[in-house]
Length: 453
Figure 1 (cartoon, rainbow, N blue to C red):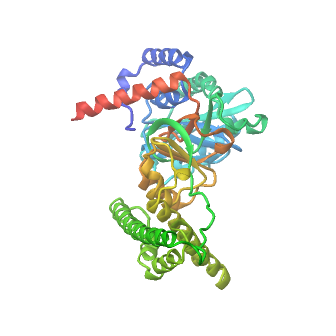
Figure 2 (cartoon, rainbow, N blue to C red):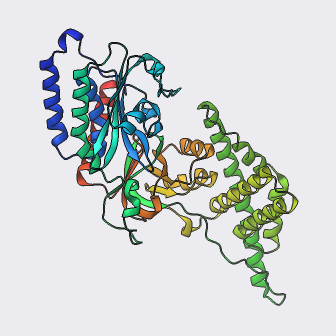
Figure 3 (cartoon, helix red, strand yellow):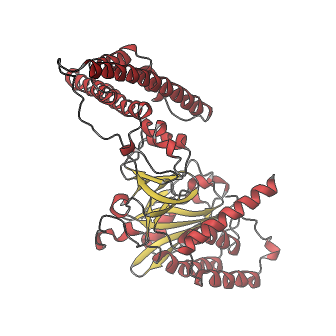
Protein backbone atom coordinates (compact mmCIF):
# COMPACT_ATOMS: atom_id res chain seq x y z
CA UNK A 1 0.00 0.00 0.00
CA UNK A 2 1.49 3.44 -0.92
CA UNK A 3 2.18 6.02 1.78
CA UNK A 4 -0.84 8.21 2.63
CA UNK A 5 -0.96 11.73 1.22
CA UNK A 6 0.13 13.90 4.15
CA UNK A 7 -1.40 17.29 4.83
CA UNK A 8 1.04 20.18 4.49
CA UNK A 9 2.55 21.62 7.66
CA UNK A 10 0.51 24.81 7.35
CA UNK A 11 -2.73 22.83 6.98
CA UNK A 12 -2.08 20.60 9.98
CA UNK A 13 -3.50 22.70 12.79
CA UNK A 14 -4.73 21.59 16.20
CA UNK A 15 -8.26 22.02 14.84
CA UNK A 16 -7.54 19.66 11.95
CA UNK A 17 -5.99 17.11 14.30
CA UNK A 18 -8.92 17.31 16.70
CA UNK A 19 -11.33 16.76 13.83
CA UNK A 20 -9.30 13.72 12.75
CA UNK A 21 -9.36 12.28 16.27
CA UNK A 22 -13.13 12.77 16.51
CA UNK A 23 -13.59 11.04 13.17
CA UNK A 24 -11.35 8.18 14.29
CA UNK A 25 -13.33 7.88 17.54
CA UNK A 26 -16.53 7.44 15.53
CA UNK A 27 -14.79 4.89 13.29
CA UNK A 28 -13.36 2.83 16.18
CA UNK A 29 -16.67 2.83 18.07
CA UNK A 30 -18.45 0.94 15.29
CA UNK A 31 -18.50 -2.86 15.41
CA UNK A 32 -16.37 -4.08 12.51
CA UNK A 33 -14.43 -7.11 11.30
CA UNK A 34 -10.81 -7.25 12.37
CA UNK A 35 -9.76 -7.10 8.72
CA UNK A 36 -11.50 -3.73 8.29
CA UNK A 37 -9.73 -2.41 11.37
CA UNK A 38 -6.36 -3.62 10.05
CA UNK A 39 -7.09 -2.17 6.60
CA UNK A 40 -8.28 1.30 7.64
CA UNK A 41 -6.86 2.18 11.06
CA UNK A 42 -3.20 2.58 9.97
CA UNK A 43 -4.04 5.04 7.20
CA UNK A 44 -6.36 7.08 9.43
CA UNK A 45 -3.75 7.20 12.20
CA UNK A 46 -1.01 8.20 9.75
CA UNK A 47 -3.09 11.15 8.58
CA UNK A 48 -3.79 12.36 12.09
CA UNK A 49 -0.11 12.40 13.17
CA UNK A 50 1.24 13.31 9.70
CA UNK A 51 3.37 10.18 9.33
CA UNK A 52 4.40 8.49 6.10
CA UNK A 53 4.34 5.05 7.76
CA UNK A 54 1.98 3.52 10.31
CA UNK A 55 2.23 -0.10 11.43
CA UNK A 56 -0.26 -1.95 13.62
CA UNK A 57 1.15 -4.91 15.58
CA UNK A 58 -0.88 -7.62 17.32
CA UNK A 59 0.37 -9.61 20.28
CA UNK A 60 0.34 -13.32 19.38
CA UNK A 61 1.62 -16.61 20.75
CA UNK A 62 4.19 -16.47 23.49
CA UNK A 63 4.90 -12.75 23.50
CA UNK A 64 5.40 -12.12 19.78
CA UNK A 65 4.43 -8.86 18.06
CA UNK A 66 3.36 -9.41 14.45
CA UNK A 67 2.74 -6.61 11.95
CA UNK A 68 -0.84 -7.20 10.77
CA UNK A 69 -1.70 -3.74 9.47
CA UNK A 70 0.41 -1.17 7.64
CA UNK A 71 0.45 1.83 5.38
CA UNK A 72 3.71 3.10 3.90
CA UNK A 73 5.62 -0.16 3.36
CA UNK A 74 5.04 -2.80 0.72
CA UNK A 75 2.20 -5.26 1.32
CA UNK A 76 4.74 -8.05 1.75
CA UNK A 77 5.69 -6.69 5.18
CA UNK A 78 2.41 -7.69 6.83
CA UNK A 79 2.59 -10.94 8.68
CA UNK A 80 6.33 -11.19 8.03
CA UNK A 81 7.73 -8.53 10.36
CA UNK A 82 7.84 -10.10 13.83
CA UNK A 83 9.34 -8.87 17.08
CA UNK A 84 9.72 -10.37 20.52
CA UNK A 85 8.63 -8.23 23.44
CA UNK A 86 11.64 -6.05 24.20
CA UNK A 87 13.03 -6.38 20.66
CA UNK A 88 13.31 -3.27 18.53
CA UNK A 89 11.89 0.13 19.42
CA UNK A 90 8.34 -1.23 19.19
CA UNK A 91 9.18 -4.22 21.39
CA UNK A 92 10.76 -1.90 23.97
CA UNK A 93 7.60 0.23 24.07
CA UNK A 94 5.52 -2.88 24.79
CA UNK A 95 7.96 -4.21 27.38
CA UNK A 96 8.06 -0.87 29.23
CA UNK A 97 4.34 -0.16 28.56
CA UNK A 98 5.15 3.42 27.60
CA UNK A 99 5.79 5.40 24.39
CA UNK A 100 9.29 5.26 22.92
CA UNK A 101 10.44 7.80 20.34
CA UNK A 102 13.63 8.43 18.39
CA UNK A 103 14.74 11.31 16.17
CA UNK A 104 17.05 8.93 14.28
CA UNK A 105 15.83 5.36 14.69
CA UNK A 106 19.03 3.56 13.71
CA UNK A 107 20.93 5.39 16.47
CA UNK A 108 18.50 4.12 19.11
CA UNK A 109 19.87 1.34 21.31
CA UNK A 110 16.86 -0.93 20.67
CA UNK A 111 16.58 -0.37 16.91
CA UNK A 112 16.22 -3.47 14.77
CA UNK A 113 16.71 -3.20 11.01
CA UNK A 114 14.62 -5.08 8.43
CA UNK A 115 16.37 -5.22 5.06
CA UNK A 116 13.24 -5.35 2.90
CA UNK A 117 11.36 -2.41 4.41
CA UNK A 118 13.49 0.54 3.30
CA UNK A 119 13.11 2.11 6.74
CA UNK A 120 16.07 4.44 6.21
CA UNK A 121 13.69 6.76 4.35
CA UNK A 122 11.68 7.30 7.55
CA UNK A 123 14.16 7.68 10.44
CA UNK A 124 11.84 9.54 12.86
CA UNK A 125 10.16 6.82 14.94
CA UNK A 126 7.43 6.63 17.57
CA UNK A 127 5.95 3.47 19.09
CA UNK A 128 3.22 3.14 21.72
CA UNK A 129 1.77 0.01 23.33
CA UNK A 130 -1.91 -0.83 22.95
CA UNK A 131 -3.10 -1.64 26.45
CA UNK A 132 -5.46 -4.51 27.16
CA UNK A 133 -7.07 -5.63 30.39
CA UNK A 134 -3.90 -7.36 31.54
CA UNK A 135 -0.96 -6.11 29.55
CA UNK A 136 -0.43 -5.15 25.93
CA UNK A 137 -2.58 -6.54 23.10
CA UNK A 138 -0.45 -4.88 20.44
CA UNK A 139 1.39 -1.74 19.45
CA UNK A 140 1.31 1.15 17.00
CA UNK A 141 4.49 2.41 15.33
CA UNK A 142 4.59 5.55 13.19
CA UNK A 143 7.52 6.85 11.15
CA UNK A 144 8.27 9.88 9.04
CA UNK A 145 11.10 11.37 7.08
CA UNK A 146 11.69 14.51 9.15
CA UNK A 147 10.54 16.51 12.19
CA UNK A 148 10.53 14.77 15.59
CA UNK A 149 7.19 13.83 17.10
CA UNK A 150 5.96 16.40 19.60
CA UNK A 151 4.67 15.67 23.09
CA UNK A 152 1.17 16.47 21.85
CA UNK A 153 1.49 13.96 18.98
CA UNK A 154 2.69 11.28 21.38
CA UNK A 155 -0.36 11.90 23.58
CA UNK A 156 -2.63 11.67 20.54
CA UNK A 157 -1.12 8.34 19.46
CA UNK A 158 -1.59 6.92 22.97
CA UNK A 159 -5.25 7.95 22.78
CA UNK A 160 -5.69 6.36 19.36
CA UNK A 161 -4.16 3.14 20.66
CA UNK A 162 -6.70 3.05 23.48
CA UNK A 163 -9.53 3.49 20.97
CA UNK A 164 -8.57 0.44 18.91
CA UNK A 165 -7.77 -1.80 21.89
CA UNK A 166 -11.36 -3.01 22.19
CA UNK A 167 -11.47 -3.98 18.52
CA UNK A 168 -8.32 -6.08 18.88
CA UNK A 169 -9.50 -7.72 22.12
CA UNK A 170 -12.72 -8.92 20.51
CA UNK A 171 -10.99 -10.31 17.39
CA UNK A 172 -10.81 -13.80 18.92
CA UNK A 173 -7.20 -14.48 18.03
CA UNK A 174 -7.42 -17.93 19.49
CA UNK A 175 -3.72 -18.64 19.89
CA UNK A 176 -3.35 -16.03 22.62
CA UNK A 177 -5.67 -17.99 24.90
CA UNK A 178 -5.50 -21.50 23.48
CA UNK A 179 -4.71 -23.11 26.82
CA UNK A 180 -7.90 -21.64 28.29
CA UNK A 181 -10.14 -22.75 25.43
CA UNK A 182 -11.57 -26.28 25.29
CA UNK A 183 -11.01 -28.34 22.17
CA UNK A 184 -13.83 -28.22 19.67
CA UNK A 185 -15.55 -31.45 18.82
CA UNK A 186 -14.81 -33.15 15.53
CA UNK A 187 -17.20 -32.58 12.67
CA UNK A 188 -17.24 -28.83 12.42
CA UNK A 189 -19.00 -26.12 14.37
CA UNK A 190 -20.41 -22.63 14.16
CA UNK A 191 -18.11 -20.67 16.45
CA UNK A 192 -16.14 -17.98 14.68
CA UNK A 193 -12.40 -18.07 15.36
CA UNK A 194 -9.50 -16.14 13.86
CA UNK A 195 -6.21 -18.02 13.52
CA UNK A 196 -2.95 -16.14 12.80
CA UNK A 197 -0.43 -17.38 10.27
CA UNK A 198 2.20 -16.18 7.84
CA UNK A 199 0.98 -14.80 4.47
CA UNK A 200 2.69 -16.34 1.44
CA UNK A 201 0.54 -15.47 -1.59
CA UNK A 202 -1.51 -12.27 -1.20
CA UNK A 203 -5.26 -12.14 -1.66
CA UNK A 204 -8.53 -12.82 0.13
CA UNK A 205 -10.96 -15.61 -0.65
CA UNK A 206 -13.93 -17.39 0.87
CA UNK A 207 -14.73 -21.08 0.54
CA UNK A 208 -15.52 -24.38 2.23
CA UNK A 209 -12.63 -26.18 3.93
CA UNK A 210 -11.36 -29.44 2.42
CA UNK A 211 -8.37 -31.36 3.77
CA UNK A 212 -5.63 -32.24 1.28
CA UNK A 213 -5.80 -35.92 0.37
CA UNK A 214 -3.63 -38.67 -1.03
CA UNK A 215 -4.59 -41.88 -2.90
CA UNK A 216 -6.10 -44.53 -0.67
CA UNK A 217 -4.08 -47.69 -0.16
CA UNK A 218 -5.66 -50.64 -1.95
CA UNK A 219 -4.86 -54.35 -1.65
CA UNK A 220 -2.51 -55.70 -4.26
CA UNK A 221 -4.08 -57.60 -7.14
CA UNK A 222 -3.08 -61.23 -7.37
CA UNK A 223 -2.12 -63.11 -10.48
CA UNK A 224 -4.78 -65.33 -12.02
CA UNK A 225 -4.57 -69.03 -11.06
CA UNK A 226 -3.36 -71.46 -13.72
CA UNK A 227 -6.83 -72.97 -14.17
CA UNK A 228 -8.46 -69.62 -14.95
CA UNK A 229 -10.61 -69.55 -18.08
CA UNK A 230 -9.29 -68.34 -21.41
CA UNK A 231 -11.79 -65.47 -21.28
CA UNK A 232 -10.46 -64.40 -17.89
CA UNK A 233 -6.89 -64.58 -19.10
CA UNK A 234 -7.82 -62.58 -22.22
CA UNK A 235 -9.49 -59.96 -20.02
CA UNK A 236 -6.39 -59.75 -17.83
CA UNK A 237 -4.13 -59.36 -20.87
CA UNK A 238 -6.36 -56.59 -22.20
CA UNK A 239 -6.38 -54.94 -18.79
CA UNK A 240 -2.57 -55.08 -18.58
CA UNK A 241 -2.27 -53.52 -22.01
CA UNK A 242 -4.64 -50.75 -20.99
CA UNK A 243 -2.73 -50.06 -17.77
CA UNK A 244 0.55 -49.88 -19.67
CA UNK A 245 -1.02 -47.23 -21.91
CA UNK A 246 -2.27 -45.36 -18.84
CA UNK A 247 1.21 -45.54 -17.31
CA UNK A 248 2.81 -44.09 -20.42
CA UNK A 249 0.17 -41.35 -20.56
CA UNK A 250 0.72 -40.47 -16.90
CA UNK A 251 4.50 -40.19 -17.41
CA UNK A 252 3.97 -37.96 -20.47
CA UNK A 253 1.46 -35.71 -18.71
CA UNK A 254 3.68 -35.50 -15.62
CA UNK A 255 6.75 -34.62 -17.65
CA UNK A 256 4.95 -31.85 -19.54
CA UNK A 257 3.52 -30.44 -16.30
CA UNK A 258 6.91 -30.42 -14.54
CA UNK A 259 8.52 -28.76 -17.58
CA UNK A 260 5.83 -26.04 -17.52
CA UNK A 261 6.31 -25.47 -13.79
CA UNK A 262 10.09 -25.24 -14.28
CA UNK A 263 9.63 -22.56 -16.94
CA UNK A 264 7.17 -20.68 -14.73
CA UNK A 265 9.55 -20.80 -11.76
CA UNK A 266 12.43 -19.57 -13.91
CA UNK A 267 10.38 -16.66 -15.30
CA UNK A 268 9.30 -15.63 -11.80
CA UNK A 269 12.81 -16.19 -10.39
CA UNK A 270 11.57 -18.63 -7.76
CA UNK A 271 14.02 -21.01 -6.02
CA UNK A 272 12.77 -24.26 -7.57
CA UNK A 273 15.90 -26.33 -8.16
CA UNK A 274 14.10 -29.28 -6.54
CA UNK A 275 11.94 -29.59 -9.68
CA UNK A 276 14.98 -30.93 -11.52
CA UNK A 277 14.74 -34.04 -9.31
CA UNK A 278 11.33 -34.80 -10.77
CA UNK A 279 12.61 -34.17 -14.30
CA UNK A 280 15.37 -36.73 -13.65
CA UNK A 281 12.95 -39.28 -12.19
CA UNK A 282 10.51 -38.99 -15.07
CA UNK A 283 13.38 -39.34 -17.52
CA UNK A 284 14.82 -42.40 -15.78
CA UNK A 285 14.02 -45.36 -18.02
CA UNK A 286 14.68 -47.87 -15.21
CA UNK A 287 11.93 -46.32 -13.11
CA UNK A 288 9.36 -46.64 -15.90
CA UNK A 289 10.57 -50.13 -16.86
CA UNK A 290 10.24 -51.42 -13.31
CA UNK A 291 6.66 -50.14 -13.03
CA UNK A 292 5.80 -51.71 -16.41
CA UNK A 293 7.40 -54.99 -15.34
CA UNK A 294 5.20 -55.15 -12.26
CA UNK A 295 2.08 -54.35 -14.27
CA UNK A 296 2.87 -57.14 -16.73
CA UNK A 297 3.30 -59.53 -13.78
CA UNK A 298 -0.31 -58.88 -12.82
CA UNK A 299 0.08 -56.10 -10.27
CA UNK A 300 -2.27 -53.18 -10.81
CA UNK A 301 -1.01 -49.81 -11.97
CA UNK A 302 -1.43 -48.02 -8.65
CA UNK A 303 0.09 -50.92 -6.74
CA UNK A 304 3.01 -51.11 -9.14
CA UNK A 305 3.87 -47.46 -8.65
CA UNK A 306 3.52 -47.83 -4.89
CA UNK A 307 5.82 -50.84 -4.90
CA UNK A 308 8.46 -48.99 -6.94
CA UNK A 309 8.34 -46.17 -4.39
CA UNK A 310 8.70 -48.63 -1.49
CA UNK A 311 11.64 -50.35 -3.18
CA UNK A 312 13.45 -47.05 -3.66
CA UNK A 313 12.77 -46.03 -0.06
CA UNK A 314 14.03 -49.36 1.29
CA UNK A 315 17.14 -49.14 -0.85
CA UNK A 316 17.90 -45.62 0.34
CA UNK A 317 17.45 -46.68 3.98
CA UNK A 318 19.61 -49.78 3.52
CA UNK A 319 22.52 -48.18 1.70
CA UNK A 320 22.99 -45.01 3.69
CA UNK A 321 21.42 -42.38 5.89
CA UNK A 322 22.40 -39.72 3.39
CA UNK A 323 19.79 -36.90 3.63
CA UNK A 324 19.91 -36.31 -0.14
CA UNK A 325 19.02 -39.93 -0.96
CA UNK A 326 16.31 -39.98 1.70
CA UNK A 327 14.77 -36.81 0.29
CA UNK A 328 14.97 -38.22 -3.24
CA UNK A 329 13.17 -41.36 -2.05
CA UNK A 330 10.38 -39.19 -0.61
CA UNK A 331 10.21 -37.28 -3.89
CA UNK A 332 9.80 -40.55 -5.81
CA UNK A 333 7.03 -41.64 -3.45
CA UNK A 334 5.30 -38.29 -3.93
CA UNK A 335 5.64 -38.55 -7.70
CA UNK A 336 4.30 -42.13 -7.71
CA UNK A 337 1.16 -40.94 -5.93
CA UNK A 338 0.75 -38.21 -8.54
CA UNK A 339 1.29 -40.57 -11.47
CA UNK A 340 -1.24 -42.99 -10.00
CA UNK A 341 -3.85 -40.22 -9.83
CA UNK A 342 -3.00 -38.91 -13.30
CA UNK A 343 -3.33 -42.40 -14.77
CA UNK A 344 -6.50 -43.53 -13.03
CA UNK A 345 -8.34 -41.04 -10.85
CA UNK A 346 -9.09 -42.39 -7.40
CA UNK A 347 -12.38 -40.83 -6.33
CA UNK A 348 -11.45 -41.35 -2.68
CA UNK A 349 -8.63 -38.84 -3.11
CA UNK A 350 -10.64 -36.34 -5.16
CA UNK A 351 -11.16 -32.83 -3.79
CA UNK A 352 -14.26 -30.64 -4.11
CA UNK A 353 -14.04 -27.82 -6.62
CA UNK A 354 -13.08 -24.30 -5.48
CA UNK A 355 -12.45 -25.15 -1.83
CA UNK A 356 -10.08 -23.78 0.80
CA UNK A 357 -7.48 -26.54 0.99
CA UNK A 358 -5.89 -27.19 4.39
CA UNK A 359 -3.01 -29.47 5.30
CA UNK A 360 0.31 -29.89 7.07
CA UNK A 361 2.37 -29.47 3.92
CA UNK A 362 2.23 -29.04 0.16
CA UNK A 363 4.05 -31.20 -2.37
CA UNK A 364 4.54 -31.58 -6.10
CA UNK A 365 1.62 -34.04 -5.92
CA UNK A 366 -0.59 -31.04 -5.15
CA UNK A 367 0.81 -29.04 -8.06
CA UNK A 368 0.04 -31.91 -10.42
CA UNK A 369 -3.19 -33.25 -8.90
CA UNK A 370 -4.81 -31.14 -6.16
CA UNK A 371 -4.54 -27.98 -8.27
CA UNK A 372 -7.01 -29.52 -10.74
CA UNK A 373 -9.76 -28.83 -8.18
CA UNK A 374 -8.98 -25.10 -8.65
CA UNK A 375 -8.79 -24.22 -4.93
CA UNK A 376 -9.73 -20.65 -4.06
CA UNK A 377 -7.16 -20.52 -1.26
CA UNK A 378 -4.76 -22.64 0.83
CA UNK A 379 -4.02 -22.73 4.56
CA UNK A 380 -1.20 -24.83 6.01
CA UNK A 381 -0.40 -25.67 9.62
CA UNK A 382 2.58 -24.78 11.80
CA UNK A 383 4.51 -27.68 10.26
CA UNK A 384 4.68 -25.91 6.89
CA UNK A 385 7.67 -23.58 7.12
CA UNK A 386 10.21 -24.78 4.54
CA UNK A 387 11.46 -22.69 1.58
CA UNK A 388 10.16 -25.43 -0.75
CA UNK A 389 6.65 -25.00 0.66
CA UNK A 390 6.78 -21.26 -0.05
CA UNK A 391 7.82 -21.91 -3.66
CA UNK A 392 5.10 -24.54 -4.16
CA UNK A 393 2.45 -22.17 -2.81
CA UNK A 394 3.64 -19.42 -5.15
CA UNK A 395 3.45 -21.83 -8.09
CA UNK A 396 -0.09 -22.86 -7.05
CA UNK A 397 -1.02 -19.19 -7.27
CA UNK A 398 -4.03 -19.17 -4.90
CA UNK A 399 -4.07 -16.88 -1.84
CA UNK A 400 -2.13 -18.78 0.80
CA UNK A 401 -1.35 -18.58 4.52
CA UNK A 402 1.16 -20.93 6.15
CA UNK A 403 2.13 -21.65 9.76
CA UNK A 404 -1.49 -21.27 10.86
CA UNK A 405 -1.56 -21.89 14.59
CA UNK A 406 -4.13 -24.43 15.79
CA UNK A 407 -5.38 -25.15 12.27
CA UNK A 408 -6.58 -28.72 12.75
CA UNK A 409 -7.75 -28.01 16.24
CA UNK A 410 -10.43 -25.70 14.89
CA UNK A 411 -10.92 -26.46 11.18
CA UNK A 412 -13.05 -29.32 9.85
CA UNK A 413 -14.17 -30.35 6.36
CA UNK A 414 -17.11 -28.27 5.22
CA UNK A 415 -16.53 -25.30 7.55
CA UNK A 416 -16.78 -21.94 5.82
CA UNK A 417 -13.44 -20.15 5.91
CA UNK A 418 -12.12 -16.75 4.90
CA UNK A 419 -8.44 -16.76 3.99
CA UNK A 420 -6.99 -13.27 4.41
CA UNK A 421 -3.52 -13.71 2.93
CA UNK A 422 -2.96 -9.95 2.91
CA UNK A 423 -2.72 -9.82 6.70
CA UNK A 424 -1.99 -13.50 7.30
CA UNK A 425 -5.23 -14.60 8.99
CA UNK A 426 -7.63 -17.53 8.64
CA UNK A 427 -11.17 -16.82 9.82
CA UNK A 428 -13.25 -19.96 10.36
CA UNK A 429 -17.02 -19.44 10.24
CA UNK A 430 -16.66 -15.70 9.45
CA UNK A 431 -19.43 -13.32 10.44
CA UNK A 432 -21.91 -11.85 7.98
CA UNK A 433 -20.11 -8.53 8.34
CA UNK A 434 -16.79 -10.11 7.32
CA UNK A 435 -18.35 -11.79 4.31
CA UNK A 436 -20.04 -8.52 3.33
CA UNK A 437 -16.74 -6.65 3.72
CA UNK A 438 -15.01 -9.15 1.43
CA UNK A 439 -17.70 -8.80 -1.23
CA UNK A 440 -17.55 -5.02 -1.01
CA UNK A 441 -13.78 -5.17 -1.44
CA UNK A 442 -14.24 -7.30 -4.55
CA UNK A 443 -16.67 -4.75 -5.97
CA UNK A 444 -14.21 -1.93 -5.25
CA UNK A 445 -11.38 -3.88 -6.89
CA UNK A 446 -13.57 -4.55 -9.93
CA UNK A 447 -14.46 -0.85 -10.22
CA UNK A 448 -10.80 0.13 -9.94
CA UNK A 449 -9.88 -2.42 -12.60
CA UNK A 450 -12.53 -1.05 -14.98
CA UNK A 451 -11.30 2.51 -14.42
CA UNK A 452 -7.71 1.48 -15.14
CA UNK A 453 -8.83 -0.28 -18.32
